[in-house]
Image (tube, rainbow, N blue to C red; front, side):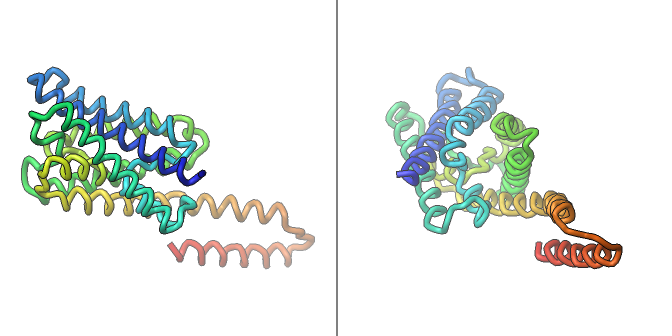
Length: 255
């Protein structure tokens, strides 16, 4: 039952992002630009923020296959759990696009992400955008002082990146967000880059986050060990210091 609740939360969260986000693109096209590019970017940022605050306590609010894959072995999900999350995210992205197709049958693209220029240009952009998005996700959820604002920070990141790169690459940063409209509309042009680039960017973001935070965590651990250690002489202190330094070096070398 607990796993079903998590999957349902991922269903709803991803559905909301694709329905409102790509829906704003469709409405903007049908209304001759009433929503505007800025409005589309704001819509994506706000809906991501709302979905994170709504479902983070239930499923962790991945809402993105790239995030789920990058968090391998660090979020308590086993392999089958990861697969279930990704299938759930993609299925509800498709269902959101199906509903949008029923509501707006005259729109052929359904908010599909297609490069406006060279594929390499969009690949690099999607890689960098997702890299920084992943950094914000991990940093904002790692430190207690900013954790209450994590959803807002992540949503703002999505908004500013969509505002900056949306006209060039679509600023997907999310394979499910691109797969949903593509599968329903039949527009698979360059779909590979919207799968590969976000996953690669998210994985690198996870590695960099680990590098940024592991030394501080190790120092805290060593300090705790020192406070617990029973040291009664200078010789014992010297021995403990050497052993602790070896432990830190070994753990940092395993990155």
